[in-house]
Image 1 (cartoon, rainbow, N blue to C red):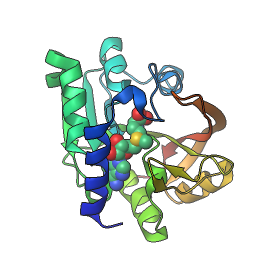
Image 2 (image 1 turned 30 degrees about the vertical axis):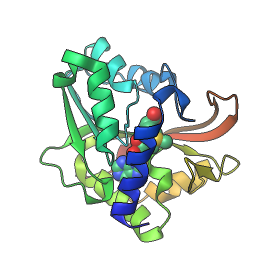
Image 3 (image 1 turned 30 degrees about the horizontal axis):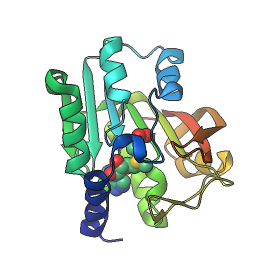
Amino acid sequence: MENTEKEKHWEKVYQTKNFTEVGWYQKIPTLSLSFFEEMEIPKNAQVLDVGGGDSYLVDHLLELGYTDLHVLDISGKAIEKAQVRLGENASKVSWIQSDVLQFEPQVKFDVWHDRAAFHFILDQEEIEKYAQIAHKCLSENGLMFIGTFSDTGPTHCSGLPVTQYSIEKLTQVFSLYFQKINCFHTDHITPSGVKQHYTFCSFRKIGK
Ligand SMILES: C[S@@+](CC[C@H](N)C(=O)[O-])C[C@H]1O[C@@H](n2cnc3c(N)ncnc32)[C@H](O)[C@@H]1O
């Protein structure tokens, strides 16, 4: 899928659907928040939520006292919706409208978070590029927390095909650049009651 097509697709999704109507909706991103707690991520860590959309993760992290939050998404409409929801607090977050595969950050991040965005990348070279970009964007010992549909999960999301990942496959994709910390499977229940099987992994960056 061409970049502009991708962008158009996601703009349309966010223009036509409310957050609570989309399959990935979760009121409280419990697993992501547990990662921050378990890894004892400091409140001044530079955190990037990749494909953050209008997820509530940023609201919760702000409430917990995180001060250096960045949300990247290909959809400007998603970012706008999150900003409107956050009101005055939106100015405490840095917002980046970009395809993650084109992302060239000016700063290094301590945490790379991605729930349900990476799995839309289908092309093997682009999958590898994503891993390289994540590695390049993170500071030394930087952490990644990533969630995708599992190998027994859905094959599509939001009308687009996805790459499914077993724990082994997800670990393998990042193995050149990241050391596995922990992986697990979980079921997400969509607002319409459908069970979706996910794979989640946390990784630590290898090298500089
Ligand atoms: C399934 S939604 C998940 C949103 C959010 N992470 C959550 O858990 O609620 C996927 C998100 O990834 C974004 N996205 C898809 N492909 C992307 C890309 N190549 N670069 C940046 N964002 C992308 C979409 O616009 C959308 O907001």
